[in-house]
Image 1 (cartoon, rainbow, N blue to C red):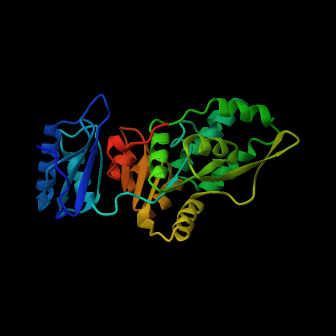
Image 2 (image 1 turned 135 degrees about the horizontal axis):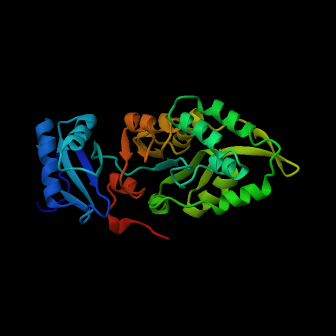
Image 3 (image 1 turned 90 degrees about the vertical axis):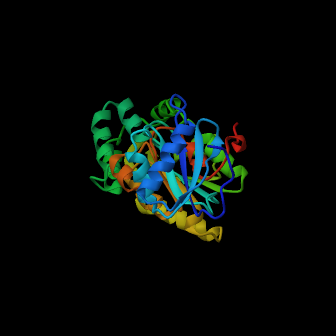
Length: 309
């Protein structure tokens, strides 16, 4: 199948992205086109490579997003691929709202604090239940932070920051969108001591997170001010859209836990990244096998357009 520009007559596009050790071939494109047709697509166009051998767009029409996703997921030949079906128009987004823990960075900061203080398993279990939607995020945060009371803060927080590792593709995602005029915000149910560093390192314009209360060098076991939780993330998205005089469809959002679902479902491109089961089931789009730069391919960026530090 030959590479060609998307035909404007086809209103939808399916993006396929493969990890490097798998790759994408013309045979994969043909299998995907056949799967879409068998699922009921009225037309499927020629592929347009976004990155030769790794990412491709297939234009199509006449099939709902969920049916297009199911067609790819159920095709025996199309294993270990990330996919996103959406309208071809308006793919490049003007806004990015991203979660931090287990999304833009590879650790859960509160779990890491607790581990350093000797009660990591207890806190990690509460975190797991919260991220899976079994208990409310705000309730779980209060419960977990209370366990920090009277423990030393400064040295502990410094050790946490030394353990921060950045998720592959995250900086490329943020810097590419920012270079193309998007406003990028890091909004976390974690803490400002981390987001202050992370947002600058990755190129975000601003950040919002919870503030751990520390008095006389020790944690009090409380969060200062209002809790940044599930509702706050969607509210931040809505406020940014209002500020930019933009529609929520012009936003991309990405996160991994249940507290991200409201913003993922509200945005034009909501993506669950290596997400918890409840998010994998309910998020409009997913990235399961590749890195965060896949969110750029979903927006139609070619690899040559990526901005790297």
